[in-house]
Length: 263
Image: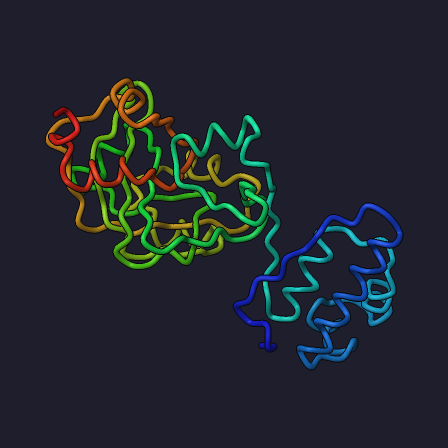
């Protein structure tokens, strides 16, 4: 692996010829810093050396090509959408969740690349009742995701929100491990513990080569489910489509035991 193994390289959108040339020059600089020749990188990318030369001279480059280029350096590519914090979409998220903010008070939402798990954060997972009940009774010990921060530390807390028709926060689990694996390997290793049939599994991961498996332990059912109406009233909570970081006051109330919330 090169000097950039495990690093994340930030890319920008090339909107004109000047930007494309600048991107090519920056990629070349990174290659030289990594100690690779064009020939060596071409071998890693399974392309001709002429293709590397074209990229670095500012030729037309697709995002997928940039991704393969930086991965050939031993790095990874992450693309984020940045919104002003006063934008309607940003307000919708920041009212209910602690989200990552960058420079100039921007809300950052990841689009491409592995999410980076924030330290000292808890997450809310939205799970269908057919699966959440199995998690709480101990039958389902692995939750599958199309996307999740593989860097989540062992012991991170996941709050389980059971989606419609229950629409309530029902329990808590510790995330022991997060695995990013080829989809077929996920099926071979976790089909039983994930408690899912092959047809539903294939539909869920359709179009993906890799997925994520979250291994749970320390599962605990709340003394009473917290309905969505109450979560909205007390915390401005809106259920995530997949997962989001829980807002600070919601985390504190749920960690202390949901009975406190009703006081």
